[in-house]
Image 1 (cartoon, rainbow, N blue to C red):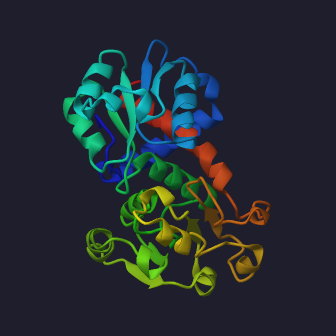
Image 2 (cartoon, one colour; image 1 turned 90 degrees about the vertical axis):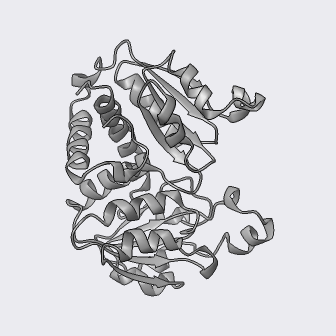
Image 3 (cartoon, helix red, strand yellow; image 1 turned 180 degrees about the vertical axis):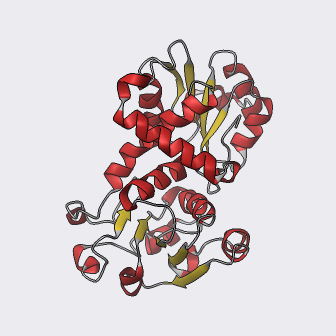
Amino acid sequence: MKNLIDICDMSKNEITELITLANDIRANPEKYAEKCKGKKLATLFFEPSTRTRLSFEAAMYELGGNVLGFSEAQSSSAAKGESVADTVRAVSCYADIIAMRHPKEGAPLVASMTAGVPIINAGDGGHNHPTQTLTDLITINNEKGRLTGHTVGMCGDLQFGRTVHSLIAAMSAYEGTSFVLISPDELKIPDYVREDMIEKNNISCIETTDLESAVPRLDILYMTRVQRERFFNEADYIRLKDSYILTPDKLVSAKPDMIIMHPLPRVNEIDVSVDDDPRACYFRQALYGKYIRMALILNLLGRV
């Protein structure tokens, strides 16, 4: 594996190996503290981020490496009109690996065609977010004990939610997976996701607008925010933004071992009173993200 652009670039065996490595890093951090000494990660974030960017930076620092980069397009030469291809060719002269987030779908793929170092897609528009998916997979594996045989509920913005698209693609490869897709009619998953990932793999899938009726059957509830930045019309965003708010009363009928996930940031879709529920694992999920990104960096740099 030279780059990570799409979660489908990875086989199940590669994902399992990465999760195993991430869990070893978690258990034995001192063993990995110097693995990337002398190496530099460039974080090229043309779009805002907190957890993804900082977890990449924390990952590289904890591996003994260094970090350079920018956190918004306006502080880069993109503001002068420089192309993505030229940016990454130049940055490849200064760094050993690049993590890139961009508002345009396909930008990291374009970058990978000209970069002289490994490219990691840290989110491209409404398309893909493979390292969040790796974070989600290690969370499911560690919290539920396996990646097979789960009924996964996806709730919120399923049309523009790149984390949802990536996770559906990844979980579709695991035996016994079924999906319950919960969204307003205006925010249903795109046809290509349904056709290429769900129908093509003959996976059981229910689409509904009703969160409460779906909860009792779920092993995993994956909440997402309605993303203001993906809307062309502010009125549509305001109308839909509070479509689903998870509160303790909605969890009364949930399985005792169901887990509640969220890629974060949350806005209103999970009430803070849910945070104390032992099934809520979204902040543990954020921590798992650091370890899986450490494992990915080691893999792409050949430092395993």
